[in-house]
Length: 207
Length: 118
Image 1 (cartoon, each protein chain N blue to C red):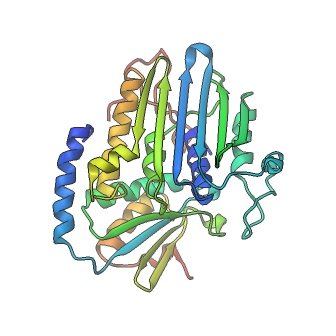
Image 2 (image 1 turned 135 degrees about the vertical axis):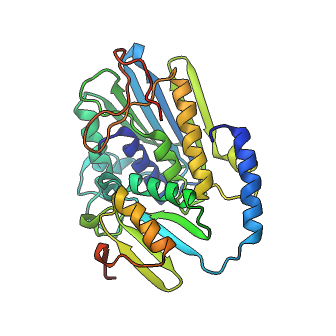
């Protein structure tokens, strides 16, 4: 996985497969404190406390149909290469919370990547899920809630491709505004940075 | 289109669309979105499908996703179902995804060389 946003999509898929109907994704970017954190919380069937250490093992999975589970080991790899931390805990009511912290300025930290892509693609899932997305950048926060969007859409389904295309543009725009006109850092599949985040290139990429 | 106000006009248009069209030849496009799929680029594949289907204004197409289907070596996988017919495309990158929309979804021709037999 080249981008942290792919890991977020993967974690959210885990949540959906665990029967979640509610999903909260929170991103915290705090360059001044050298912190980048993302958290995925769900109300799925939860996790057994004793299974948590075993999640790091690629040959552990709770699924009957396969022998490997690579999601968490791959995330852990992305975390370990830059000295970050991972916390997985069952929530008291129901569900699971996964929190990954990264040193913001570490050279080996994977870029955050295409978050609008992750969110719009996630919403094509079969499950009906209420998604609450919070993105904090320095002092400001952007919130996106599918409940509000669904009530605005009325009978038009959220997963209509026309709506998802709109959503993709809307999120791109809002997140760029939040980050003061800087595009979200991302990386192409060739490994080249396409976003500009350092102070040396102040002009946001025009689309 | 970027703002919430624009969504309102979009909704009106789509609602009107929903009233006219008949639900008789619904096609389901399914992308595998397990860890293996995501690592192989399934998110980009799905993004292209969303963009192209919306750009070409294709109706009666349902996008959906599943987890790992066990053919990890062939990811990203795209399965297209119409009634009892099912076609699975393998290693679908952005370019192939665009072609699949054009040739399969719009012209109704299966691109055989990119499929595996089920």
